[in-house]
Image 1: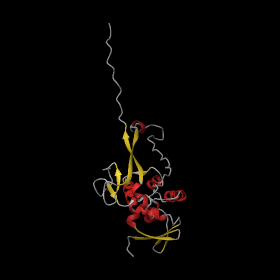
Image 2: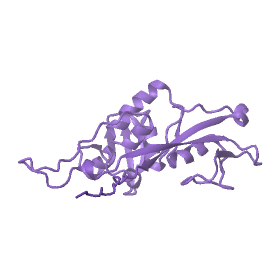
Image 3: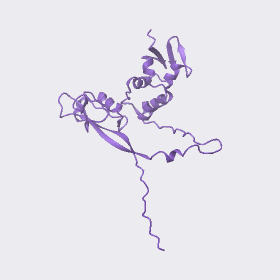
Image 4: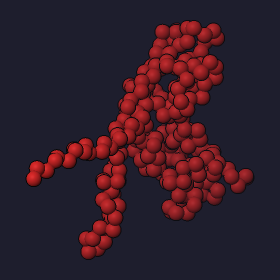
Length: 227
């Protein structure tokens, strides 16, 4: 067997993938199992993982090319959030709507309480976000059955034609916008039947950071001194 090929037994379900795919996310639990950082159970050349084998396909699809699962029921999404958290895929966990645990802030003080440097809050500008909304829809103005984005020419989006046409299937078009950081306003997004595709549309959004510019204090002119 090719040394790069990995066979997985997840909850009794067999999967095949590669080391390259798993190592795309080196901090994930699977990558740590392969590196030996986390204890793992092997049966010959098969890595055995005691987790939900049915839902693991969504985890593997995300590791392969960043695909987000679509059409999940509320129950499956809740179960998948538990699996994703176990495998340490924080970005996927956030995309599925999971709550993120607060990260502890490193201390800049010595054991005696003396500060080694200015407090971090004084060095970081407050940041707010600006939300951009996008409509994914059937492209009536283009022949050939294209799914398009409104507005056109979005940064980071892999267009096929005219900086507007994404793909000919709603899943492929949605995945392209998801890779560029856009999220559906309704989760899970409602996918259309083929008979209603020409009237289907989906709203998506992306939050862009907008740093606030610190304003210098106003200077007052010195007042004349009367002698």
